[in-house]
Length: 263
Image 1: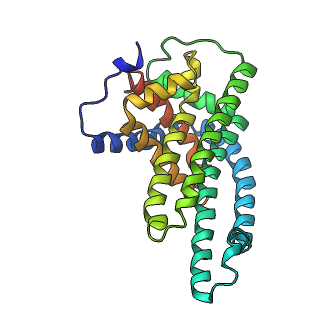
Image 2: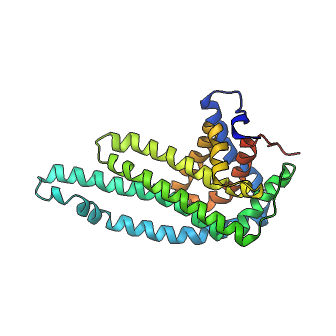
Image 3: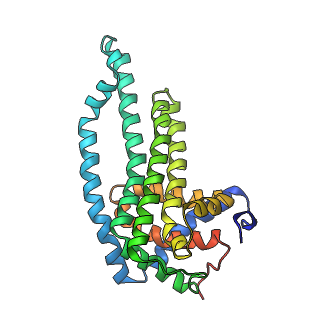
């Protein structure tokens, strides 16, 4: 079945967006029923979380210096306009760092915890009747493909982050519209990243993921944005990551027109 034949649920875009967010909640529900998987799922996220927390804390510590370095032309301005510009620059730096950090955190954590998250994802699919069209992929081949696709997604998201960074300097727009656009962009790429394991099990790659999720974009965005916002909460990424993997298995099955209710 090709992507064009995938039929989206018969609801409005808002309803499908909320339904996508609900998949994350269902992921929590399915994940917490397996205490052993809960423990295993948190370990990789803890390792990556400690590293990223240290990096982000360092960025916050030096953000004033970075804002001044990015705006040398304002050195001779009067105090108030110079201060306002550099506050905007600092917010733009933090915002883009958060966007890129969330996406790279996901890629790094999925790579570090590949065996654990694969087990969680496959366990979810087993509860839903198994994986139709399953293909046996050697571990190292799967890990290599996952890393390559993750790097590709991170590179694209970083390119998108550049204009968002520039827009962050625009008064009001930079502090209102840009965060919303950033959450939408980040959510889309997170959804693409997280459904990787279910698609790999079916022998499908990044272009297949993109086509399938695009066929019902509101649902994919609802799921991705919900995960993105949770990842912005302190320690949220560590606690939510395993549930996001479980929810992504549901999203993948829905995008493929497969059974998403427990049997």
